[in-house]
Image (cartoon, rainbow, N blue to C red; front, top):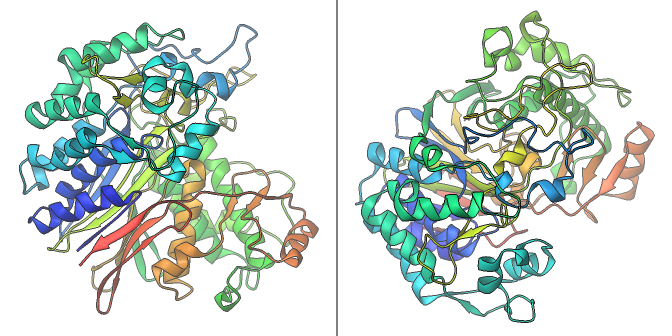
Amino acid sequence: MGVAAAHPLAADAGLAVLRAGGSAVDAAVAVQAVLTLVEPQSSGIGGGAFLLHFDGQAVSAWDGRETAPAAAGDRAFVGADGEASPLSEAVFGGRAVGTPGVLRMLQAAHRQQGRRPWAELFAPAIALADNGFPIGQRLHTLLTDDPLLRRDPQARAYFYQADGSPHRVGHVLRNPALAAVLRAVAQQGADALHSGPIAQDMVARVRGHAVPGALSLADLAAYAPLQRTPQCADWRAWRVCGMGPPSSGHTVLMQVLGMLDATAPGLAPTVDVTLGVPGAQWLHAYAEASRLAWADRALYLADPAFVPAPAGDWASLLAPAYLQQRAALITGQRMATVQAGEPGGQRSAFAAMADQSEHGTSHLSIVDASGHAVAMTSSVESAFGARVMADGGSGLPGGYLLNNQLTDFSFLPTDAQGRPVANRLQPGKRPLSSMLPTLVFDRADGRLRMVVGSPGGPLAPHFVAKVILGTLAWGLDVQRAADLPNFVQLGGPVLLEPRRFADGTVQALRERGHSVVLLPMASGVHAIERKAGGWFGAADPRREGVVRGE
């Protein structure tokens, strides 16, 4: 059994729960509670999550994604000039805050799969919030660089010194306000966040902000997590299960993997991992497959309660014949333009969504003593979310940060021709996400092979693809696969991790027509893989995550 998570203190809390006989879901609750404290830039109880669970027989999929408030308008992020607001402005303040869902989702999953009492699972986070934790280098750097967080009085008083500089690395940061909120949640359940004084405080901060939002007490009270049908697809000898819409991550991942296998012979040869990196020919094919997948994402994917699936079934986007058709477009040179396909022969009446960034997330992978597993990715969206900190009405220092997930909707609801964008902002709607908690099974015997996921916003599917390819196609163990250099394509330039690819590789990509940008990419893969001798975990060396287990 083991836990791979984004911070040592969170992984320690999860392992302690497993050692006490807790289930993978129990451990996930404890890990998320601690991450709210020690990794506030990425996830927390003010945000949302997607969770996959395997109980030894079947996979269940939980949607705890935030929802748009009932009073939200589709032009919330459109300026007076009719143009989309700059992302740097849109993320800040109450306007960007969606109804959080992670706690109600975890409680629903716990009711089905929990073994330990709910209240017990919050004890590690409460103790750490009371006694404090040392600020690490990553949090310190993000606090230093963030231009917005200091503008929130509650956050400024908690994270920063009187001169506006963040507390030093190693400073013990105590959070009595969060401890009080978590005590209430431990005793009253998730309803403590969605009603009563904690909810009233949250709504007051959103609606009373200088950039006010629409969140209401009714929105919080009405929020319900959804148990969805997991989206599973075959790839080579494996069955890969993930979240369907409103997450796009699994669809993008499986489209890319499927198209790579369907490219013309010799275009995407087997990678020689003894060199440590893929070569230009393989990267070219990967980039073109990614561009095709990204075009489909921009046109088709959104909350399924608001947008119909192409050809009546989201699986149409992963049909082998469709992926072969799309892969046939890949040649030896970069395509001049890329358009969405027509899965099932169906044309879309929607407009493609313009490029927008997603940011802060956290992923945890857990396997318990029974071999049951959780892959969960949670988020407050941008680093530090909307930069709105709530204290639950306690008046104590600290608290928790609210998400800015409404900026994951398309800022422009229609295109120049008036066609609606599938992922436009609408009341009660869940914004499109790239999060992709993933479970991989052996098709021959049905045994669980891997639990994996990563933060990274739209980059996350590429980080997960790298690990799946590295382990299942290239023969690496999961840690070596996580260590491989990152390569990403989001429809524009090819992004490569600096100093990890040969100059000749970069030049060869440019000769094929690609623009190449060398960009540090702070992936945060956390994975657990079944090996002959048991479970083997991996934590991405680019962040502070660790693996704990026995």
